[in-house]
Image (cartoon, rainbow, N blue to C red; front, side, top):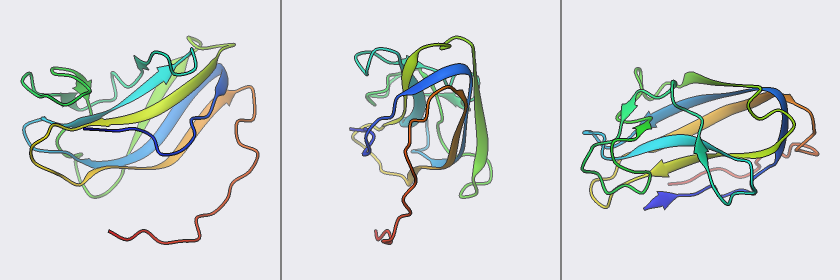
Length: 144
């Protein structure tokens, strides 16, 4: 099963781009599951991995997780979990002048469950447009 974004994807126009996030992840031991960060320059028709270099491992060669086997990803648990760690993705000028979409994608096999991936404090710098017209605070509370 794959967990796709639950919110509208936002288009960002980059000059020189840097994307930052704080994350806490705990996927199934053995690297059967994982999470990746991807970018699209064609409205979501295709996606490219932009997290390589920030990941802590690769998915298991025999996993059936939809993100793929032997793929670089955030796997297992981050050091200090459940505390958050910072990940910075320097996109340089590769996407300068383009409208892009970024997604955080989780891939899990059909076996054992684990807590998953918490993402907070997402920041993108070097954008040349204003993708959000405002911020609206969450008034409800999450319940398991």
